[in-house]
Image (cartoon, rainbow, N blue to C red; front, side, top):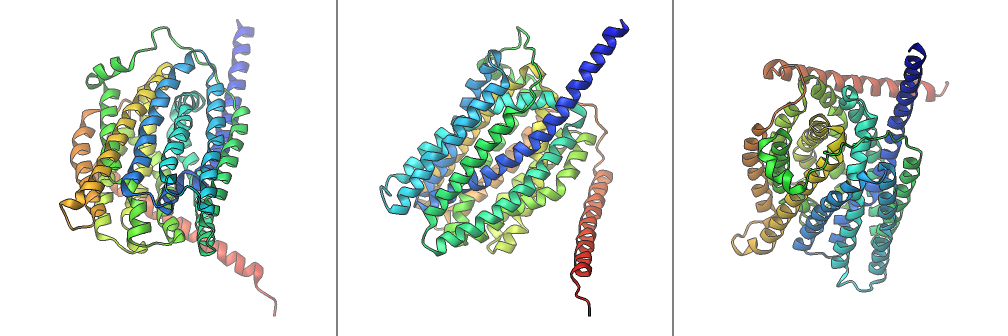
Length: 471
């Protein structure tokens, strides 16, 4: 018995070591994927704007991928039954990386002035196909990571992972903004986009090489684990995860009414340069970087539900603040500040809530259904935005994009604050006292900022000593 027990202990220790290495490698892989996103996905809308896509076309660029991606996840969730999660991810990431090639070609065609009239339509088509394979790996990756990271460490780990990938995003996004302004100044804007998409392809394929080395725990699927999408729909209102899914779908719908148009508003209406635009869209990442550890500790202590309840209010306020801001500074310290704080906490909590609520065997399946309904919300919301953008000018002389922002903000606040009360926390957590906990959050935020300021001051003081020339 002792020999058997010792053997099991050694085996468990080896597995923990492999999981620890996998967790660290996932952060590196996530950083590579972030570079790909910073040069690729982040510039699809500016690319379409530069290609003279109309406002409705910009909305379709968001809505079709928003629906097709989750549909891909729905279909790919069944692949886990007969294929390893690692193989699914490797295949999907390979095709995803290679699908930047058509977008590189479109950039070069625009650079040469060829087929410019139909290219906005082709951007929608190719980016939609790209999204299908980009999303395909989602259920397998989500399930895979759920088996690597221990339940008690998830809040802390994913907060840390998000901080590191956010730092990478800050550096690469600033770099891309400088470069794109340079290409524009030299009348080589579309050549710049082609180079950006090539970088996106290179780093995504490089992240695949890291997946090859990743440890994959074995998953045991129970025979009764599967249930159809229609069974899920039928029972949604009677279970906690289903009610959470309804809330998240509604939030996506109301968010996407306005989401495709913030970039259009900055680039066309406000006339921001690409560097200014880049700094503005980057600012929420910086603000999120400061609060991510606080949200991670907060969610571990008070639960993910409480985080979503608080942050969903901030998410609702964001588009309303755009009505009163015009300059880059106003936007950065207004809607973008709230966006960074609110979305950082919300996304972390929503992801961890799924891990807490769904059993390991059903994670891949449930996240596919969840994302599919979320995709329907994105599609309907972006479609409504496109309809308002196209026909709303017949009923008002106001800037139609500001009207869209107002509609999105009011519907977010009204619907989401009703639906957030329909589900509940599943873990045993400390009871949340608003007054006391808010005081603690403010105190920790203040001390954290002071610590950052002090360390920055010390760093520059040390540099002055080192570089001070002797008399």
